[in-house]
Each structure stands twice: as C-alpha cells, then as structure tokens.
Length: 479
Image 1 (cartoon, one colour):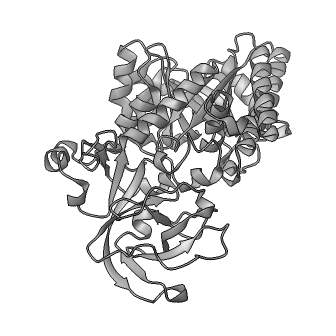
Image 2 (spheres, rainbow, N blue to C red):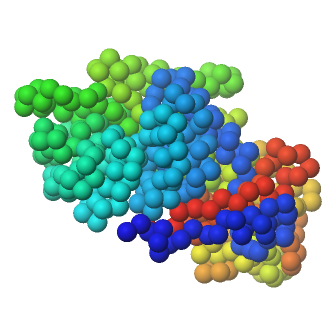
Image 3 (spheres, rainbow, N blue to C red):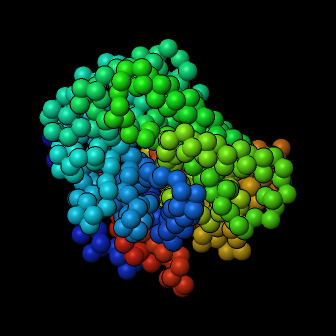
C-alpha cells in the first residue's frame, strides 16, 4: 500500500490560503524557506552543462522531495528524458501523477530506486512500474540474492525493470568493487536474469559520497574521473562476460556517476566566466583528463550519465567542497534557510566574554550534521541585520554568528570563526535581540529539510518583495 495513505502530505491548499501573499516575518518558527530564484539558477546551470557536454542527466529528488523542484530539475525541454532517482518509495508515489503527466506529453520517464532492491519494495515499485509502463523503473543490484526479487518485480508489474550494478569506488556504503571477484558474481547473476527476461541489464551506478571531503575544483573533477573510471572497468567486464555467455541483446551500458560535488564539477568543463580557473594548471589538467575520459567511455559504446541531489538547494557542506568557482557556487546560491526566532540573549557568556543568544531551532530543526569548514550546526545569514552584507569569503574564513551548540529545540548562537582562523578576531559586529527573526544557512540541506512538512517559497528576483511568500511546496513524507 502506498505510504501516502499513512503519511499524507501537508494540506497545500489550506497553507496557500493562509500564507501566500504574507511576509515570512509573519510565519511560525522554526520554518523552512526556499528561495526559488536560487533553485532556478542551480537547476538551469546543471541542465545546460549536461546538454553542452552531451551527457545524460538524472535528477535525485531526495533533498527537497517536492513536485515543484523536480520540475525545475528535469526542465521543460520535451526532447530531454525525465530521469529521476528516489531515495524512498514515498517519493516515487508522491511524484507519480507528475510523472504520468510527463509520460502523456511524450517524454521518456524513468524512476531509479536508489537503494539496492529488497522484497519489501516489490509491491510498491510494481505499482509505479505498471502505471508508467515499459522502461519506466530502474533498480540497483549489488548482491546475487537480489535477482529473484527483481524477477518478482517483473512478475507482479508485468514490466521488466532496468537494472544497474551499484559500484563501490571507495565510499563503502553500498555496491561492489568493479575489479573484484564479487563483481563478477553479481554480473553473472544479472546477465542470467537478463537472458531470462527478468531484467534489462542497463548499466552501472556510483555515488562518491566521500567527495564531500574535497577542497578544490580539481579534487572534485578528479573524483568524478575516479567514479567514471571505476564504472568503465565494470562495464568492460560486463561486455566481455556477455560475449562469453552469448548474451547478444545487451543495450549500451549507462555509467551513472555523481554526488553533488562531483556532479557540480562537470560545470568546470563548460564554464566560460572563469579567468582565474584558466590560470590553475592542476585544474586544467583535471579538466582535460575528465573530458578525455568521457570520450573514451563513449567510444567504447557506453553512455555517461550524471546524477545529483542537493545541488538545486545547496548548503554549507557544498560551499566547503569548493567544486566550482564562486561565480557558480557561493553564499547567494544556497536556496534553503531556516527561519528562527531569538528567545534570549546572554551578555558576556561566551568565549572572551562575547555574548551568546538562544534561538528556537535546535537539533530537530537543523539536524546533527557537521561541516568540515567550521565548528557549528548552522550560520546566521545577513537577512534582517542592519549593516551586515552577504559574505564574500570562503566558509573556512567566515567570522560571525553561528549555531555553536544545540540540543533538541535549543540553538545557541555564538560568535565564532571558520577553521582557517585560530579564533574570532573580536566582538560581534551586531547583536541580535529578543523577538528578532533570523535566517540560518544549514550544514546539510538533505537532513535539515527532512524535518519540515512544507517550504515557504520566496523569490529574490521580485525586487522589493523578496520576503513575500509566493507559494507553498509540500513534500513526500515517510518511506
């Protein structure tokens, strides 16, 4: 049974009637705010890069879990496939009507369930598959025992799922190592299932989650290259194995790589607004290497696909990975902020007698996710603060109000500095006051946004009305 039965979405119509047209200053806190202008920019850049480089594109919806942001991720080009990744079955069920709409418009639609397939998923994935038809559902494999489950999915839905072998290229979260014996065990089981008509073995999939630890554009590009190279090893082994086993109807294998830092890094291959990048030899070397690798994959008869999830929304972790130039990845590109109210102030309580303050946004609003660039759970944006402007420095060099400590509903604002500084250089440039509303940049948007049932949507491109709520985006809930 669909999770929508038990995890109903928040009542959008009632929320629209109550809040659209009002200022975000008038909503209950804590609240999740989305700047749609930033989402539009971030999505447009990714689509343009993939089209320019002739790469496939698959949008992960796990961060926002909304119909509206998904539409921006897949764009409105009728010739471009609507390929998405879901991290929960609930996301697929929530988006199903929109996907049916795309299908009726003649666009190719494919939904990849982002965890290796289990029996628990069969009935609900089968409903999505039978609703959308042939070629519309993909699954991941990293264990031979999953093939009988895939066969059950075909039996229940009447649709052969596309299947990709999940590759572990260092993260050790899921997948098999492409040059291992275990990979061949999975590949042989998948080829047998393909030959039996239970699946269509269609590619390989990787997620370089450890790319979040990177610190430069060159590092992010190099990690993307490592993803593609690992999958190329696996793809060539599958082709060879298929030849040995007389599997003659194997489609071109899709090598789908990406975490947001590595996916964002491909924009460095097409960026025309970066004089500084042209002067960095290491960066140019990695750009050349990845461009050449993409060509090698294509000349081998395979297809390159990029996937990513947090990139439309962004967060402090992404800024700290430095995978693109500041003209494309900076403070103003973070679309998600958390609105909170100041409950108390504590003069002289902090380090070196600096003040502290209490906001009503703690662990349940922000998530317990860290950022390698500073010690804290979130940073206070310049919004609503007199004389404070958007930072122009890296996250590591930032000095200002941060959520330095927290508990369940308590966030403690401390005046602190990023890790490139030994300590904050002085007293706060401004003091927050009781009753003041502040906006917080989160460390990890995927985790932070999961705590809210809807987003208050604003549009910074509406000059003079940047704080006016223009829409409510409700989201998938549950699993």
